[in-house]
Amino acid sequence: MIIKKAKQHLKWKINDALFGLNIKKISSTVKPTCIILVYHGIDEINNTKFNSRFISENIFEQHIKFFNENCNVISLNDYYNKNFDEQSPTVVITFDDGYANNLHRALPLLEQYKIPATFFITTIRNSGSDMLWADCLDLASNANQSDFYLRNEKFIYKPQKGYVSAKTNATLKQICKGSDYSYKVEMMKILPGAKEITSNKYYNEYWQLLSENEIKLLSESKYANIGAHGYYHNCLDKIKIQDAETELIKSKLYLENVMQKKIDSLAFPDGSYSEELCNKAFNVGYTKLLTTEDYLSKANETPILKTRLVVNTHISLFNQMTAIFNNTYY
Image (cartoon, rainbow, N blue to C red; front, top):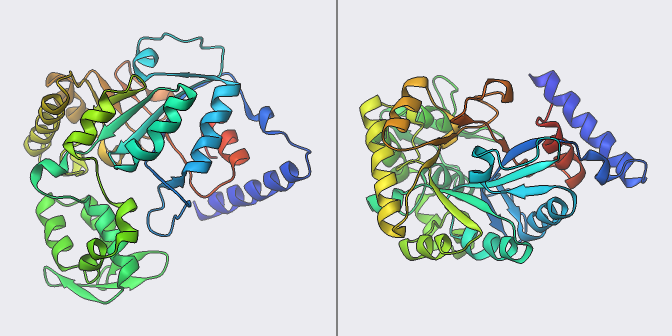
């Protein structure tokens, strides 16, 4: 995998050099395909230091302007209903997590270019928490790298990896992904830098989630559709199936109550799922299930379960469009 990634980074550098010399043109990246994309947050300055899943308003506008001029951009509903030409380049835009900046930064651009998008919202605010556990971990690690103990296990900070177990060297993020929400709550309470997040307004852009009123406002736009993204942002296939089913139901009912609209689409948090989980989701009313390329290949999609390509916030527009229309980064 290391060699594979190194080769890809070299390829990206060569592509950028050829593009800079006008030997390659960005329009040449477009190919007949239909792909669903995943964005997360939109900020002002493309600061990936705090959240590596964020891109700037300017870069996001470059993306959607390119899509608008070079391919068809359709809604998720049209994708599932096959209301598109399979021989034409076609893009579906989705957002995960439910950041407030989706309303304040992304939606105005989508409306300006008349491009539809589906926003998959984690409903953790209904539980009384204002922040996703992964954002708390990322931002707290940026603010303070002191050692700490969690359930008698020592964690130390390592550059490039973040907090890792001093005993096993497993990253705290991976441990959390395999844990239930009670473990994550404990972590958020004792992270050395946790209190600094809410006291520093500069961090707000990178963790603040949509309020109930903002969810309602977003849902009222004709260019926005809303889907569910779990209740606590647990990896649903890593917790007890009955707990996962409860999350599926609670997040669906909460969003439907807020918007007074039906919710029938679900993006699995972190993309992780199981066949049993898919069956549970379908039984409670989700008819559109979304994962990511890490968990499902395009060739293994089903009528209900579809894969998506997560936007890479660290590469150029040329390399991003190349990956999009090739349906892969490799």
